[in-house]
Length: 301
Image (cartoon, rainbow, N blue to C red; front, top):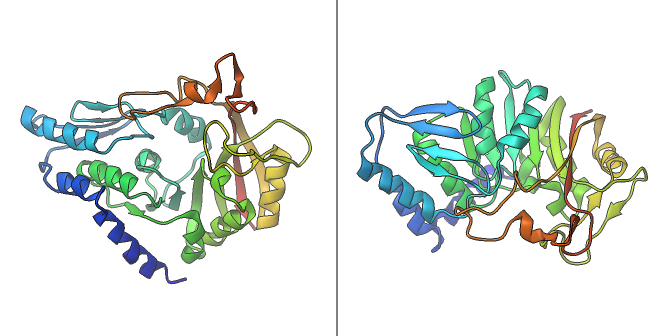
């Protein structure tokens, strides 16, 4: 796999007709030399010198880039209240993390919220991988002012991770695996990108049960069309073993709640409350068990 050729080809996606106006707005944003960054639950950028006119331009560009799924962010007082309160997932994982000096990848990174948060651990580098030119543009807006030389974003998918053979100490794959029609192939690609002994942090939808079985939605799951398999924890462990991982550790099991995923003015669309049975929040609108996530850590053999 010629990964550099694929990267170069995908840069052309930033010229798509629905993305080009966003890129033009991004290019015209003001340079703020005294921007200060705070990496808390809200990733915050501030400046004592920014003018109201400059702040308005930043807000207009950010609103052009909706929907904002991950966050939240505060850019010079423009509070981007994303659909997901992503700090809840990050704060859940944070006690388990040791990233200092490591080469890290975040696969399915969306707009890079977790990448920015990881900077607090002083990793050597963080590569974000996500094929969406919209999310890449959101990242570029944030990175314009955060300006970290440790971060890099490429519009690639999980299937391209084998092109980074033996490169990473730590890989994150959060909320991606259930979108893959062959989860074992996806896990193998993640494994190939890790150094031997490297660690994978993964979260995915799960169902309760002691048998290694999966829910296979007939069409949609929680109104999501590309959810292929929702495993029990034993099934997920077997997938990981088949892909070449060992030392499977369950970190947390968490039900998705409306205070974590909800509709805001920054998405202009439906969210969790629309995906659940209005008469029984423990079921999806399709009648399946409501979304629960298992967070695991495992290692390349």
